[in-house]
Length: 356
Image 1 (cartoon, rainbow, N blue to C red):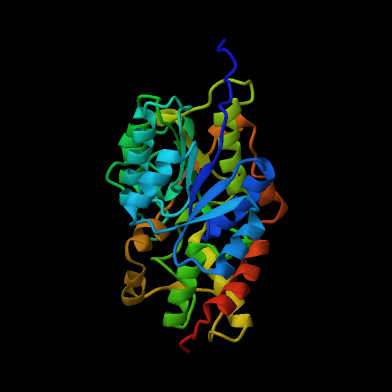
Image 2 (image 1 turned 180 degrees about the horizontal axis):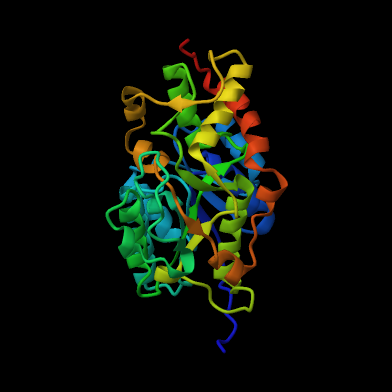
């Protein structure tokens, strides 16, 4: 039996994505679960009001002005950080490699420091079957405890994950990647609505109807926003203190954590709820959904058929087995209950004009 894992002395967290949908809720989670840990947050276009909003979510937050393309800033901040958490852009290899360089410089410095922790957020879309909206018989059920990135190297988002896993190979940088499914729920931060919801709404406004990529028979697992950030907190707690039994948790190739509930939804059902909500508001002429035309669907770019037209047959095991996590918020407020409220709020915030 392995000896209990000893927690290092953590002095600070560098957070990417604080102004985003997941980042706002994550700030609340970090403030609750790690109240003594100061957070340095990367923020573009800093303003006094933006700083106030962020500090209302986490009182120990300090802003670092910059963007994901400011590699010198990212390297410098990573070099100083005990923990880096990136929930900004799942597949942005430029920022990921800058963070890795900074963490490697930290490890190689003459000053002894604990092995830095790097937690990155990707998504289960990496396992998508490119079904173009159809429901195909799955070739496999993807389980995180058996997952190998080699199976999906050609997929969208894979390059960033590969770089992170390679960086953690020696164990000097402790890397963990969380892969949530379709995230829903109203966020408390500057961005309150999930990116997929906003993409679907923007396309619906242009098309004059709620739509899908292909027939909409493809299915995806979903999870509440609060469960996603509780999973990130659970991974960080596990990295610091060990898992349920006090042992070291999975990292590197074993540091793969799917974040999912037991529930799934077809993208046709998802689109139909959007259409029904928009119809009730008098924004479109008919309820339900129909497939987007090619000219509309193509506007979603790489996220279109590749992500929203694929099925993802995944099961999350590692979080529960190692850390005792469960998707309790998903059970308390389901997608079908929450989504209409999210759509109503998004329409107001996005100030969309719908074609009729």
